[in-house]
Image (cartoon, rainbow, N blue to C red; front, side):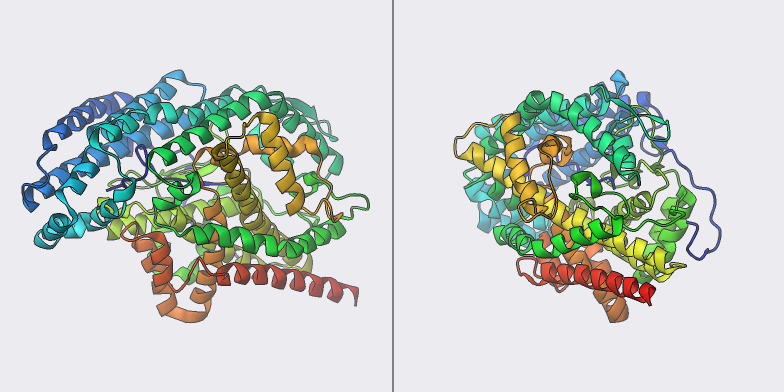
Length: 629
């Protein structure tokens, strides 16, 4: 069962920010499929509609259980099982609608299908809004007696029921819960409007690069061409892309402000001290984790600045380092590695060998099937994600693979989510398989680290080794420092609303600019931040997901400790790591990390990650010195 404090239907979709010939070749594998097969979910849109109508009847029938939960443990089990069955099918319907819509955001009928299932999700929330208040009315003593009496209640629903009892101070009466559930569709609209504008309707500009190539600088092209070696081309891409977003600053500001206001509203209604507290409460994560992350990232800014100065030196920049200098490989090699989808599969399997056969078997299973939508296309959703919410089917992955090392890294990242879902779904009943975002990034970022180490080990030259070490540094900048920077911004804009101060597109850019300049050392002369690029906040879809991004940074710190343990600790350490993945949502994510040996509220994992960054820079400098001899 989903947490009672997660407003609206929870569909766990993990997103990754977007996001070889030189490695030794392993055994050949079949040519990869590049387009997913949604018939594993439903044979056709018509079949989906039939299932939708059936599920709507199931949802409407749930009201019959109202008032019966305290009758007996058997009746409690029947009620929870019926809700679980309806919700499992609802998730499956949701996955199909979302994936189909993301194939081409311009196809109206597919967008309408997604709205249709969102409405049914709200209807489910309304139909079950009485559940938590009624359980609390039954009372903790009786609920715990029912858990002890019924093995199936204990096996499938004990964690959910514990969570209900924990949430008592923040649970409203039945009428109020019904009203709040009914607001779900309205509160979700800022995110839907943003997606429609950003992915389908924003008129992206065209530029002509120094080689004469004309490029439409949409989101996928921006991600690709910001890595160009030609500095003037990078600046042109940045200027064109961000100027277009800036034209819509007022509209985009209104969207994000409305989303923040909705989250502040929901937190107040549920008697939380803040929107942050409400967001962390759902997974029972101590606020000290969020605060510790921000504290440790700020304490490590001198290490980030060392990296930026190294980047400037290796790129041969003699004037001010600029924000558009962040993305190209900081060490140019004559033949930059390119990776086909087949290369990405082969190398990912080789790099993740330390995780053992149970993990690799999941990868092979997925690679052999049609689970991925891999290649960029016009109208397709940008970025990358894995959706594992179709419990009885399999995960689906959306990628925008462009043959770069970044695409390879994103591939390995998203398959970390995919194997996580496979392991959790195999080990847990549906009601305990849905893992929290806080642990969702563990395997995916761990995959990136293992991939990075593999590429460094198998580099064919000193130059190639420095290239991959540089990419590893950029991964830490992008996942730890950048996501913590986002987390600071997200906290700041919520606090603005909570303190009664107005927000606008201009104000959002001001707040973002201050944080961006601090992280990148503008005052210290490390990097000059052009205020024109401070509209970047408008580009980040994660801000519509309610304190989501900080978990990338915490997960990178946790993954660093776990992967090191796997490499150094042998089979027992590997089993602890796999058990964390198999646990799914059977316990609170902070507690799952502690079972794996890590306290995410302590400074240790963050300092360990910063130490890894320092070691990588030391190794680059050692290689530089060796080339001078």
